Amino acid sequence: MLNADRYAMLGLGEIFDKVTAGERLSLEDGELLYNCPDITAVGALAHHVRTRMHGDRTYYVLNRQVNYTNICVNGCLFCAFQRERGQQGAYVMQPSDIVDRVLDDKGTPFTEVHIVGGCHPDLPLEWFEDVIRRIKQQRPEIVVKAFTAVEIAHFATLAGIGTAEVLARLKAAGLESMPGGGAEIFAPRVRERICARKATAQEWLRIAGEAHGLGITTNCTMLFGHIESVDDRLDHLDRLRRQQDVSGGFNCFIPLPFLTENSLLKLPEDRRGEHVGLDRLRTIAVSRLLLDNIPHIKAYWVMMGIKMAQTALYFGADDLDGTIVEERIGQEAGASSGQGLTISSLRHMITASGFTPVQRDTHFNPVEATL
Ligand code: V47
Image 1 (cartoon, rainbow, N blue to C red):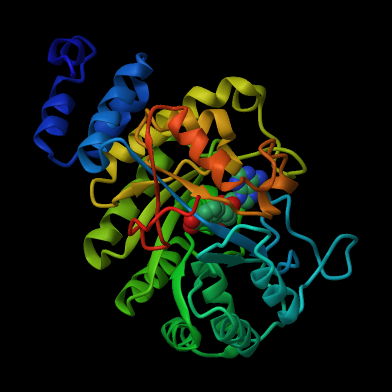
Image 2: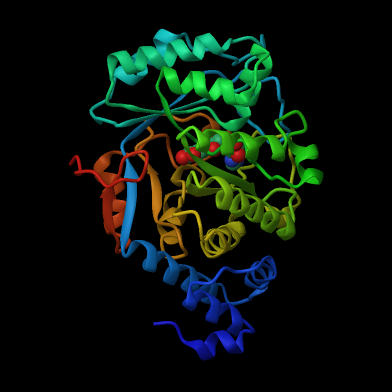
C-alpha cells in the first residue's frame, strides 16, 4: 500500500495523485522522478503500476537469437559488435546456417526466432525474404521477429524502394514482429555523436508506424548510460509515447544499459562501474511510469545482468525476454550474464524473486508452459 504522505514529503504529491488516478505524467514529472533521492519511493510507484497492469505475473518466451552478420556500414561509436568487411572477426552467415540454427533447438522447443545483424553493404532484400521463407517452410509454427527499423531503412536504400514496401515484402515472406533495437537515443545532438550514419529518429519512428499499420507489432528500446542527459532520455520516452498514441503497435519497451567493454565510446568514471546499478533501476521505473500506453517493460537479462533483472521486477519490469541460446551483441560488449538460459533457470529466476512465471508468445499472449 502506497503512503500518500511519504510522496508529499518528497515533493511527489502531485505525481502520486496522478499515478493512483491512472493519469498521464508529464516530462517535468519524469524529471522530478529522476531527481528524487529516495529511489525506493520511485520504484514503489512503478511497482504499483506494474502490479495494476500485470499482477505478479512475469513473462518470458522460449526464443533463440541469430545475429546473421557483424559487418555493418554504420560504424556506431558505441558498438563493440560491428566489424568492417575483411576485418578480423568479421562474419556473414549463409541462409542455410541461419535455418540450421533454427532447426537445432538444443532441447528448448522455442516459439520465436529473433534475427538481427549489422547493416551489411550488399546483402539484398531477396536474401532476407529467402531466409524468412525457408524458416517458415521448415518451422511454420515459429514466429519470425526480425530486423530493426534501422535494418529496414538500410534494405530500402539498397533496393531503391520505400520502407513501407520493404516491410510489406518481408511480411509476405513471413515476418510477424520486429525487435526494438536501433532506437539508441533520438536526441539529435547525441545521435549524431554515437551513431551518425544510422537512420534518424524521424525515420526510426516512421518505420515503426509503418510496421504497425501493416499489423507487424514491434518493440522499442533506449540505449542509456552513455553521453546522454536525463532530458535526452525523457525526450526519447516522449517520442515513443507520442508514436504509440498514433500507431499503437509497440508491445514492449526495453531500456538497454550501455555496456562499455570493447567500445570506442569511453565514459568518465562516474558513468561506469557497479554504482550505475541504481540508475538502471530508476530508468526502468521512470519508463514504466511515463510509458502509460506501452503494455510491457522488459528487463533484458543479457544487458541488465541476472541479479539486476530480478530486482527490476520490483521497479516496474514485467518481462525478462527469454532463453536466447546464443547472443553476440551484448557478449562483445562485456555482458557477464552468459549467452542462454534454460527454461528451468528462467522460471526459477522469476519464482525466486516472488513472481509467477508466465510463458508467452512473441505477441505477449500467455501460452501453456513448456517445462
Ligand atoms: O540497438 C549495442 C544495443 C541493441 C551495446 O526487441 C548495446 O525484444 C548495451 O535491441 N551495450 C540491440 N547495449 C539489441 C536489442 C534487443 C535485445 C533484446 C530484445 C529486444 C527486443 C531487442 O543493443 C542495439 C543497441 O541499442 N547495444 N551495443 C552495448 N555496448
